[in-house]
Length: 189
Image (cartoon, rainbow, N blue to C red; front, side, top):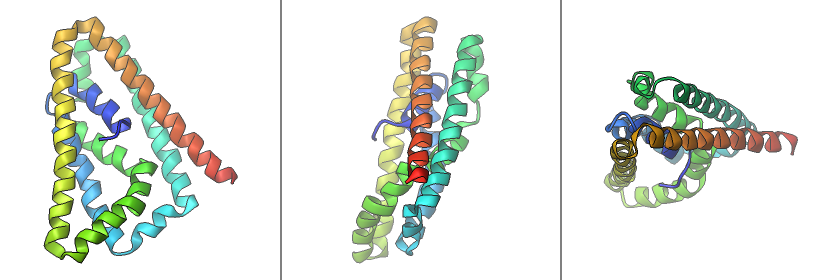
């Protein structure tokens, strides 16, 4: 539930699609569930390798910058066309944003690993319950954001919606640059 690129894009997409949060959570889960299993099987240590973090950071940062640019382009066009621009993409956005977020992967390789390991100690059903509960919280939060954005777009009107979307575009740009700069710092170390 920490604000980040997923929050910015669910607000952007949710402004025109009340179910964007659910769809984005599905994409997120497509990456997160197998990642939990991979980490439990011992592969989490690879996400802590600086070269892997650099590649993920640069790729993720570039993707976020492209999404920011798309948001800014959509602001210049008719606001009603925005729903067409984002139609059918929340699942894909959830997949790409999740897979390309270095901090998400690092969290799972550290804190998430500890939580998942504790769940495994209680048995496979405890791990499954942990995984489903964790994802369900993501689903609820993203859908709340999406619904609020959708309802807010009606209340704010065209001009207010453009301001919110511009803010989300700036946030995506910021996170993209931050991911790239963080990766470059690792590269220079």
